[in-house]
Image (cartoon, rainbow, N blue to C red; front, side):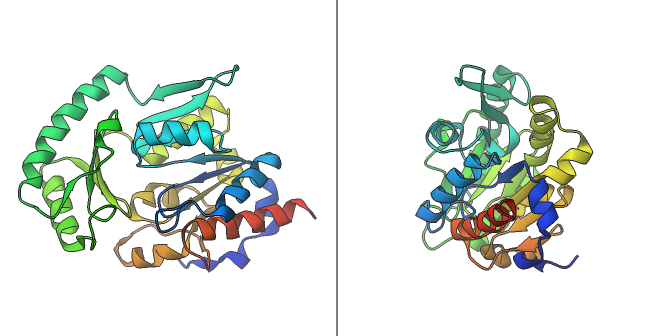
Length: 267
């Protein structure tokens, strides 16, 4: 399927949008920072009634901060394991894919297997935020590993999959988690159960933005999908591509998209 320039995104599609779901690292951020333009765009989208929900492989501890500090509706965290939302008093709530205790126990089993695999890849390491993860295991290949260990990442990912583990690569980590869920599965649960959107409404009123192979489940299922410019590095390894692509990378690309959406609301 062809990828179109963002300018091809139809105005009527933008006008119907109620939700923007977005990856975080290298989609809202760029070069490890949250651009001012991105933060401003998040505030403007919220002011126009468009609910932004980051969908990230990042840890629950980081996602808790995002939900508290940024103008977002909530956060789907650890690759779909948990939705951090708010109750009627605006207190944070945690909704796990399965019972939290069960997922925590599975995390310890996964960690043991991952540590065995990592012994064969000395240039890879557990992510520094592993202590703040509630359900999954993250391997750093390009966050604090410099230069990025791309070859080892590919070999390690292959070894993890050979063990039957549920592993996917983001732009900075390999995330390893229990089977049975992914970003899309939790997104669909949240949209249908929390916001009562039908499948047809999800196709028409939700747009997804991402930058890496672990966004493929979202690109495959949401007709309105956008890749920020830096996704170009990954497209050759991806089976499911975004429908549109920004000209700017990371959070600057998100801001580019936000301005297109907001411009449709002023007409």
